[in-house]
Structures are given as structure tokens and as C-alpha cells.
Image 1: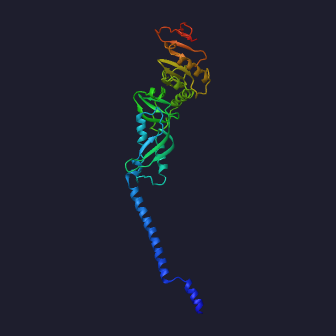
Image 2 (image 1 turned 120 degrees about the vertical axis):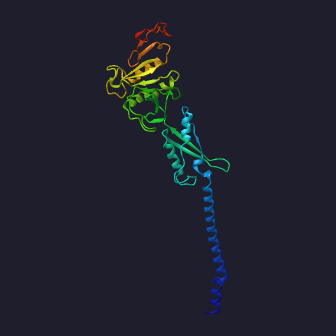
Image 3 (image 1 turned 180 degrees about the horizontal axis):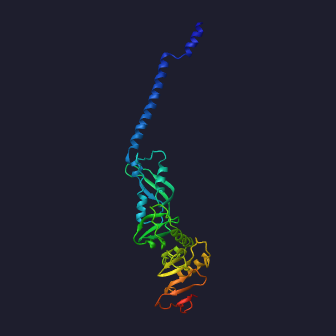
Length: 320
């Protein structure tokens, strides 16, 4: 090999010092990476181990709960258990928000979770879970053996029973006269046809706005005791109880038998009665299931004067 070629190759090949420098450089870089990973794992382990990052220690805040929610219902919602039997769930656990959503939706009061917002904890302030809930609204109470059970539109039992009916607070009527079917566990649906008939009437009153419109003089109960004429054959199946009077509904909306008038006429008659309580105060029964109102006056009741015509209302027969 010529001296000129050896000189050119030696100028291209790295020297031993350069090779050692590159080797130390690679070792240093690998060490930095290993140290960084190890350090971040230690930091993460330390952070994850702090109680403030455990969801069980976070505060619960709700977005605009309905006005009918009682302090007891709020306490139940705030008391939803976010802990886990096997591990303490933290902000860093995969899928933890899905688990939080599932825990809330397991509550009988919750129909769905519409959204979750997080306010992260600091050294002095606890973390906050902001939850937007869509709740199951009570539609009626069911009276059974002296207790009153809240139920939603689907017949699902909500909460603990009450000794006294909280009708005024929830703005719902009580279904009375249902046969002795044992109430379901909280969160389960009431498997009783009588309750279904009563809930159908309560749903019509809710959807038509009557329950809200006349909240100051509400319909107190839906009486289903005479379904299928089991107590008084030939009499109305369902009656509404209002201010010591029976407002006859007629046949159940779930009945296949013909009715005297349609639901629209019954609702029209109900509005006439509920809108003029002074006029109908002396009646023990008002037949709202007929096209023309008729009624039976209570014994000893004095005739009421119609505020519009100034004529006494008859003690029985048509109510003009």
C-alpha cells in the first residue's frame, strides 16, 4: 500500500480516543435515560401514594339538582362509595372516570350521568368531582301497610318509605287501594298491576300539567280499590281524592272496556273543578268521567253560590 493511501485512510478512521469518547457518550446517555425513568417512576409512586389523589377522599359537587331533592336524597347521592375493595382508586388509574360514572348510575335515584368535571387537589385543597346527574323523578307514592313508598314513572321504588305521605314536598298523589303485594327492594320495580293502573293515571295528570298547575290544592290520591269492579260492580274503577271529595275517573286507561268519555274530557272537567274550589266545596262526589258534571253533596252541607251566576249550586244532579 502506498504511503499516500495509508495517510488518507488514517485521516478517515477514528482514533482510539475518539472511539472511547463516543462509547462514554452513549453510556452517559443511556444512564441519563435510565435515571430519568427510574426517577419519574419513584415520583409517580410517591404522588400516587398520597391520599389526596384517592377518589374516595375527593368532595362531590352536583350541577343544579332539582328543587324536589330533599337533604336526605342529597346525602345519599353524596355518599356514593367511590372506593375499591382491592385498591385505592386514584386520578392516575386507567378507566377511573368510567368507574365513577358506573358507581353513580348504580344509585336508584340516578337515571344517567350526563357529565363529570374534575378540580384537581392541591396541598391544601381537596379534589372536587363535579357531577351532572339526570335523576329519576318521583311520580307517585304507593301506600302499603301504613307506609308510603316513592315510585317513578316505571314503578321503580325510590328511597326509604315514609310514615306520613310527603305529597306536598314532591307534588305527587298517593296510590291507595292496591292489593297487598309486597313492596320491592329499593331500586326494583313494583310488580303489581294495581300500581301500574294508578301510575298511568298519575302520568296523565303530570304530562297534562295538572299536578303542577294546581299544586296549591292538589289531587291527594288515586284510588284503585275498585279495579275490575271487585268491590262495587258497575261503579267507576278509579277515583281521585281531593279535598274530602271523590272525583270519578271512570275506567282505567289500561282497561280495554269502553269508556263514557275520553281522557281529554275528563281532564277538562278536572280543570273546571280544581279551578273553582269554592264552588265544589260541599260535594262528596263529583262525576268528572261524564260529559256533563254531576255530583253528590255531603250530608248537611250548605249550598254554595256560583261566583259567576250568583245562583245556588244544586245539592245533586247536574252541575252547571
